[in-house]
Image (cartoon, rainbow, N blue to C red; front, side, top):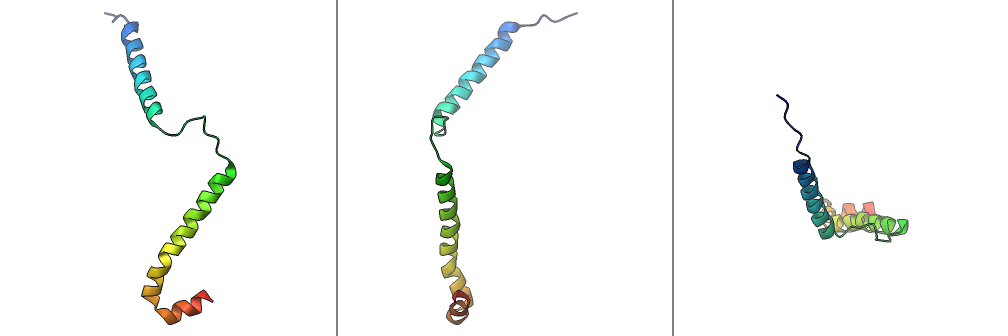
Length: 74
């Protein structure tokens, strides 16, 4: 016995998913209207790497001591 295809149920599921995806897209701050340039990304990547190095320097100095760090920083 063949089960009739219920196109309305399938359409309702697509509409529900579309409404849910639209709600998520409205909530997300990232949209296609943002005008980011490549150098913005490069700057943020460099600052992240430099920031990690600057934050790890006090820990390294506390573990190695003043004399070893003074030699390594030269």
